[in-house]
Amino acid sequence: MSAPSANDRSNRTLQLIGAGSIAVALAVMGLKYMAYLVTGSVALYSDALESIVNLVTAIAALIAIRVSSQPADRQHQFGHHKAEYLSAVLEGALIIVAAILIMREAYDALVRPRAIEDFGLGMAVSLFATALNGGWSTFLIRQGRARRSPALVADGWHLLTDVMTSVGVLAGLVLVAVTGLYVLDPLLALAVAAYILWSGSKIVVSSMSGLLDEAAGSEIQTRIRDAIRQSGYGALEAHDVRTRQAGRATFIEFHLVVPGDMTVNAAHEICDRLEAAIEAAIDGSEVVIHVEPEHKAKDHARGTIPL
Ligand code: ZN
Ligand code: ZN
Image: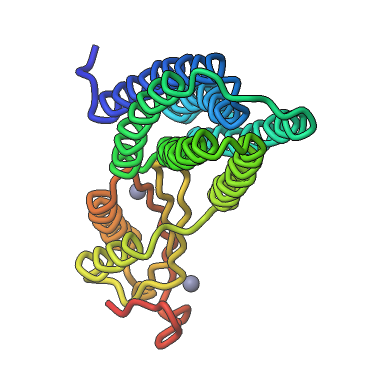
């Protein structure tokens, strides 16, 4: 038995965070639904419904993290990193379902206006749930960025939209209580539904981009080029650098031009040195280098790195 690697430990932390998300979603959902039950407010119903989405997506995210951490196998030879994007796409789809459910209930309340009961208690319970969500969402976004987990960041942002809509809903309900204009309650719920749809489409678009082999960020690209410049001595130039991001993994490939009469041994030594330097500079990176003789040089072409 070998000692657990840094990667194993990081995966275990991710799974713990995922379980925490499920617990928070359960608590918030229960509280918000209670606030809806005591008040009968459609706006609070819309808020509670979004929490059901949170619960389902927290479970999906945990499964995705477990799948993502599986090592490469015969069927998936580059690993399972993209499983995280699938959960983010699912999250976007569920947000759309929640918006439709809210619109239905809001329409019902518009046709048959209802009075709001037990206003103070409903507000207090909902405020508490909102504070809980707020704390957890900032925690998720920070952790997700540090660990380059798109699913965690998406969850965090989604929770944050919850917090913002909840604050809007509570402010609106104060207005309803003060003015007695009960029609404002379903209108507020409709506004929440529109906002949920908007945030859902953003999550779907960014996950789609990841599924379509999105390039690494410019900061990572700069670090790759710096590492090639520093460790590529002995070779003539590097060109056609391509990157793609898959969850926490970065796949990097490029062409390395060497003198045509250089031995395979010598060229391979440069490749090994470059691979080690880049993999040390970029966490979770995998490098493939294609060696070429000097007549394949691109000299001053855009993106060429002279060595
Ligand atoms: Zn080439
Ligand atoms: Zn080798």
